[in-house]
Image 1 (cartoon, one colour):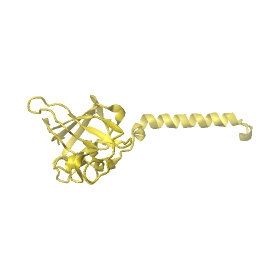
Image 2 (cartoon, helix red, strand yellow):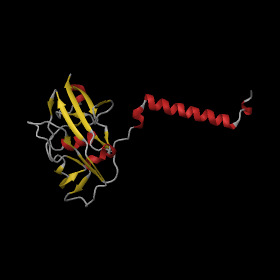
Image 3 (cartoon, one colour):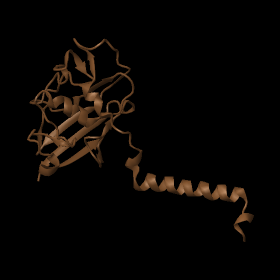
Image 4 (spheres, rainbow, N blue to C red):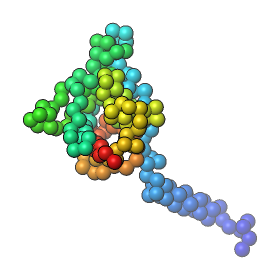
Length: 193
């Protein structure tokens, strides 16, 4: 059979099948390819404050986080990201208000995400904000640095994460906290190697 004799419909069907197979292969073997890309600039966002124009958040949601380092809970200070250098009198788009009573009842700490416009807020942006107040941060490669020694914790700890009880894979720093997942529970586990 000559190629010229093959009907246009047959070629369209072959093209559609090839595209479908390629899409399914990517979805099955590389599902993170579809993950939202993090908006790292959210750590610099400020609501109110002395040097920022007054804006109202259009997105407001509350992921919850709990961190353990070698089995010990790591407490996040209350008011992290509030009245911070560069955002005096205001709040960062990602911040903490109150924290649980860790001595009597360790629990999840609520992260407040209040952004102007829809943003893909990476978990690492919270650590960039906390670092400005002396807490854990990120290295230049955007990897966790719990003890702020400039060495990626991936070198010192086995780091794992659960979200709503399910183990997660991939870059934990780039995990995107989305508005549609309001109230999700994030657990980070740092275990010394």
